[in-house]
Image (cartoon, rainbow, N blue to C red; front, side, top):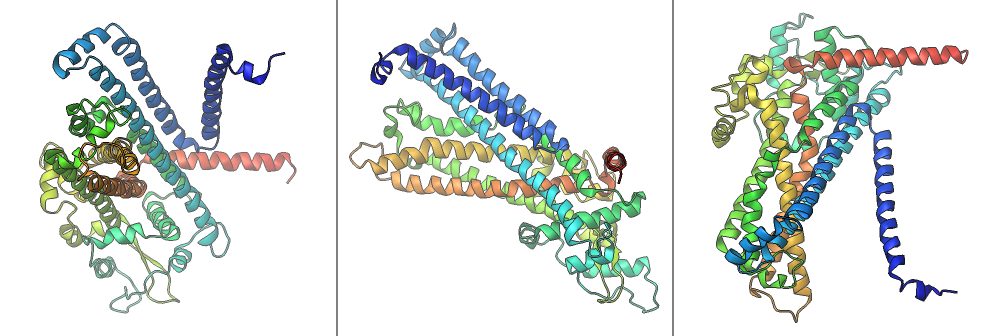
Length: 497
């Protein structure tokens, strides 16, 4: 009878083990996908489908490289080019394999971040529904009135009826609105929005609901959370689509850093001679300064996007006020409807005006705003929705690429070299500052990614209210709510209630 030790020395056993492991992974993947689909709201399902399609595309690239390039008919050509120009027949082939692995890691992490955004969206919709039903509906009648909303949000008290005649005119509303708009362009908008509680965010959506119901004559059954869930789903589906153009910004980023390795006949951090490059990412001036510039640009990009969407959102939100604790709540119109406040507002200050004009092909000059809502978009003009949706995608992609490369190719390598004191490294004098600086870069990128969910949610808000209300989604939301109510009534009737 065969003993366990004898079995473990049979090659066939290990072959069966390897194949079984692969099948087990496929089963786990299928089960995970089914679980995600089952627990994802219907409006978000297309986002999951798009992400899965992109993962399949990344898998195809790997298959093509392994069968055609590195292990196929082009392998000899690539080997000859590598030997003639880089002095090593295997160097370029190994670089292809490394870069494919890197692209795959970046793609997977990007979808991981997209998953975090999806989770934030789902959580936002659920919290909005819970808060509106439980926390804000004080009398439990199933309807959140302006007075209940004002009490729950502890809105500020201010005199709106300036002449005290008991009649509040539009002019008095405008004056009150101007009194609450001292910091419409202030950088403090960032901190206010970032620190906002779930209740306050739900209050924003419900104030918006009150405005939509007033303007569009919607029924009381209109669920704003379902409307925004549909909006989030549509925008997320666009954000997670990775066209070939999306990969282009990675070329200079990776080419600059990878040149440090290739100069020393190193392919990647997993190469046997990988430590030869340690310290030279910091010691090579053009690599160091270009990375510093890219990090600074990325941080400014993230903060500006967050500020711009938050500031525009503030201009679009109606303002809920009460004259005193006993008076009725009053819904003031959005700030952008006042020509004076609209003239003061500027979402494209200083150099950002030029940048938006450049990257949008003329921006507001070639695509001028068609209404007061689009006038809020500043220099980007009517191109804002498409341009800034791409801006969110490209910035997230850039941060993910920086995190993956800095972590796997520089930080882990330097950390290993520092722990192994007896190993030979490329530049011992700069390896520690290199490790510390690139760790700081990763921390910066992680902070920028922490802004991504709120940035996306604010973008979705400013492109789906007022002049940008999606009437087809509003009708679908009302129709779905009616259908659910009818199904509940039929079920109750069948059960004899």
